[in-house]
Length: 297
Ligand code: SF4
Image (cartoon, rainbow, N blue to C red; front, side):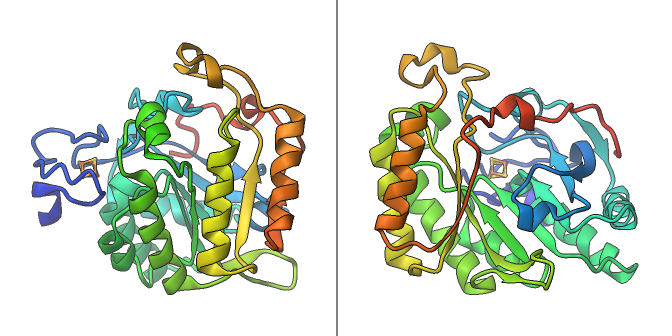
């Protein structure tokens, strides 16, 4: 893959030769996967009855101090596999009844994924492909995934560069991410569901509310409404639990208060937004973090 010789797959644009050493994301030239299984805890339109065929990739182009998946995203835990094996894993998940193939933190692996999906489709893969990303993507990479990805599920994490720098070590997150999200929207549009309520195609934006950052969340919701309209689908997540290095940041070293979540849900409807997924406030992130045990890999 020539593009790995001077990698600009994500907005970090390291320009590094990944055949010689990993870039900022910690990923070299191989696919690294830590788990593949039927995930029951995504949004109901993604998990369905049988579960979402989720593949967790190692490495990440962000450095979130509170990362729930730090074992794989920051510490690199996982197993190197071939593109052929990745494609087989997709077919195995389909065989087990997966509602879709859900690619978690796919960005550094986007080129490998495109090849694996093409190969799997030739062998009968027919369920939707979900690109489950932190949102920090280039428009070029999103355009290259046209025809490969059916459902984009990006985060929009921050509005303020001050927070993105402090908590995820990225200085231009909102500007870059919103451009990428618009490219996703232009490619797949609003969600389309089948008769059972499973999502088949479209854009579903995720936002995890951080304690004390309610004004930041409000800016993000306004941006969504102003740029995509009131029918945009947004998953508002309250599952934040301080993990990894979050204890070093006093203001986010706590869970979200119930009133904070209710305040944001209220604001969401006041803006005129119509389509949201919300969680039980009692949801805790630890319930959602799978064991990264190489199962299914
Ligand atoms: S994918 Fe990794 S190596 Fe490539 S530009 Fe992004 S951080 Fe750098």
